[in-house]
Length: 239
Image 1 (cartoon, rainbow, N blue to C red):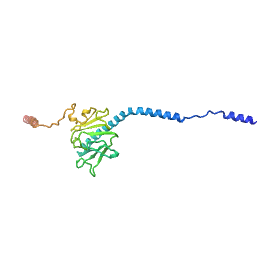
Image 2 (cartoon, rainbow, N blue to C red):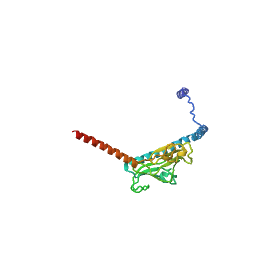
Image 3 (cartoon, rainbow, N blue to C red):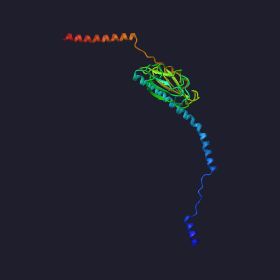
Image 4 (spheres, rainbow, N blue to C red):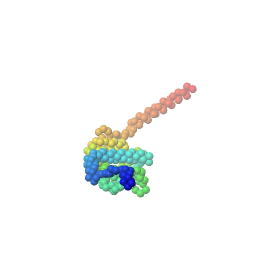
């Protein structure tokens, strides 16, 4: 009977195959292969990331300029864009007046002095992406807009990855004319050149009415009035 019970117990539970996991050696081999593949793939992603960051910075700058223009027209001027100082948001770049690497902000410049004073309203802020250099064509830390939405002077910006030159494939330039026209370019020769002086964009001169044109307009208007009066007098005479 004991033999029968022992046999039934073995038959009920059966023989189980041992469960086997990864050994330490196998795990280390897999981790090493993943690390090697990641090291090989990382350099190919670097240009993509740099290009994305540059485009983000250019898009943000273009958006802020358009926003400042519209606000200046709406509010009758006194709108300024000013660069963020070094240390803003933990940014360690932007040491010079022409370096806008840390970003910028748009504010209501009540006294039109180009600086943010107590009580002046900040309308928009933009923090530049990390590891991007934004350089202005002139060493100025602000851009002021008048009531017509025009900047105080034409300018250009170059936006490049950190420690790269304007010849880098990801580099871009943004220029604004004295009339407020914006152009984004990938030609390094035009990065820091205002739109007014680009070869493909001849200078646009705002032209008013000359004295001779004013006199001609007055004479034509006078002749028209005399003609109308003559017709009226003839009508009254006939009646």
